[in-house]
Length: 279
Ligand code: 5BU
Image 1 (tube, protein in one colour):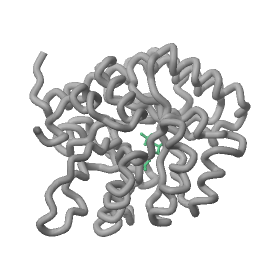
Image 2 (cartoon, protein in one colour):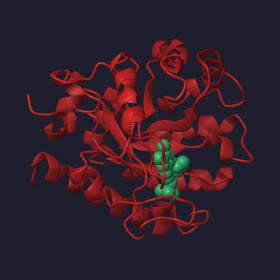
Image 3 (cartoon, rainbow, N blue to C red):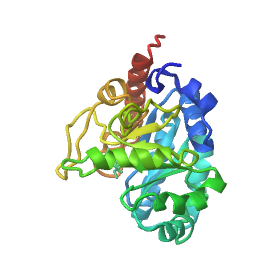
């Protein structure tokens, strides 16, 4: 069997054991898009306008639901309705980082009840494997998937070297629930000890820090192009925020739509180049 990076999304979907990962891979293939748009705006009407505009072009909408200042429970119902209308999954970028018992509560309860609507969420590996146990106790019965933050896109990130290797080992020990990584490159050969061969596993790599027009922002963000991320580094999903909706609230719907279409096309072309498909 070819390495994961050389397999098509459809081949990977057919054998993925986790329901959230399988659904994401199937959605990518069905809609021919590996684009996830990160909708980081603070007013709910701006949020919905952007989600409705980019919906046809994305496999996944990434949220930071805690930055919506006029949040109310109906926001979730409307988001779920848009996810059905446009056929995308939802990823709350919550970056859990506490002890197992606390993250289980943060994931299931509180104002946002993330586990009840977010197909995928993520966690920092910094507390060790117990963070996975805590989240898994809530998410696994619901068919959810977890991404570990193995690397970050920011200048000076501490998630490198041995830290990244340990994150991959934690994921390997929890393959029923950990479906992949937030990372800047494939992790397939990371963390293997000398003489250890590559296990039969399929971790998805979702990658933020993607932009085609600038190299970064004034707060440490660093951007690479879809080609660098998908073709050269073997990542599976490009996550784009301000590159799609602009610097404010995405009020120019046609500009937002055009950028989503542009990033979708670039991401898909980069994938086709990687797996050697031409059409
Ligand atoms: P941008 O507007 O494309 O820079 O937004 C990037 C999004 O991805 C934003 O929501 C961040 O919270 C998120 N992100 C990131 O940029 N880099 C990382 O390493 C991780 C998340 Br993890």
